[in-house]
Length: 288
Ligand SMILES: Cc1cc2nc3c(=O)[nH]c(=O)nc-3n(C[C@H](O)[C@H](O)[C@H](O)COP(=O)(O)O)c2cc1C
Image (cartoon, rainbow, N blue to C red; front, side, top):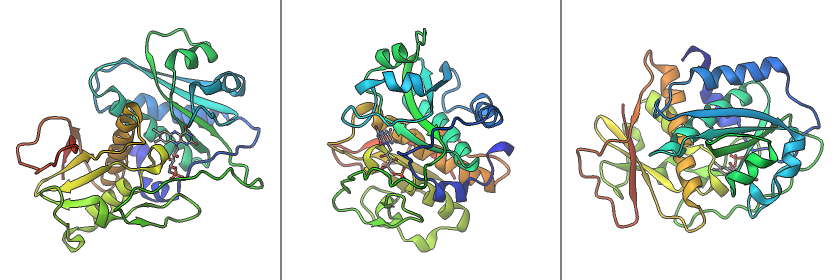
C-alpha cells in the first residue's frame, strides 16, 4: 500500500471538475495512475477488468451515452474502466476507479465521474473492441481555474445534516447523520471514536457520489463497521453500487495509511442483527 499512503488530505481536498484546460496529462502521470490500477488489491480479485485512456476525440462522440441527463463533460482525456459483469462488479470497479481518482488528485490532476448511460455506445465512441462492460467513465485533466465552472444543482437529501467542506466542494453528509451505533437508527456518540477510526469514517462521509446524494450509512459495531444502502429515488442502480465502492475505498485508503495492514471489506452476511428497516439494504462489512 506504500503508493497509496497519505490519502486523508487528498480526500478532503478533492472536488469534481467540470471545466478543464485543453492540455493532456503527461506520460509520467499516466504511468503513476496505471501503477495504482495494476497494484491495487481488488475487492473481488477474480473479476476481470480493463482500463483505457482516451482523448478528447472519443469524448466528443460520447453524446448522451454518459453524463447527467445525457450531458457529458468535455475533458482532454477520459479513463474508461471496463469489467466483467459478476456479483459486486460495480463495487469492485468503483473502488478501483476511486483509487485512481485520488492518485490523480495527489498529482494535481482534476477529474469528474460521468454516469454511464450506455456501455455499448461508449465503447463505440472510444473504438474499444471488448466483451467487458463499461463500468466507469472519468473525465480527467487540469482544472481551468480562470473560467467559472458550470454550476451543478445538487439536491441535498432530506432529514440529513450536511457539512461544508474545504474549497468549493459540495457539502457532505455529517458524521452525526452518517453513523449509527450497533443498530440502524440508534445515534452514535462520536466521543467513542478513536482518531484513526474517526479520520477513516470522515473519509467515507466525504466520498463523492451520484448527484452528491450519498445514499448510504455506516453502522459502527464492536469490532466491525457495516455499510448499508438507504433508498434514494434519484440514484440509479449502477451508480448506487459505484457509490458504495467509492466509499469503501475512502475508508481503506485512510485506515490503511495509518496501520501496517490495510483493512479488508467483505460482502459476507453479518452475524449480528443490524435492525435494518424495510428499504435499507446491507452492503458490506469491514473489521476495525
Ligand atoms: C457514480 C457517479 C456518477 C457521477 N456522474 C456525474 C455526471 O454524470 N456528471 C457530473 O457532472 N458529475 C457526476 N458525478 C460527480 C458528482 O456530481 C460529484 O461527485 C458530487 O456532486 C460531489 O461533488 P464533489 O465530487 O465535488 O465532492 C458523478 C459521481 C459519481 C460517484
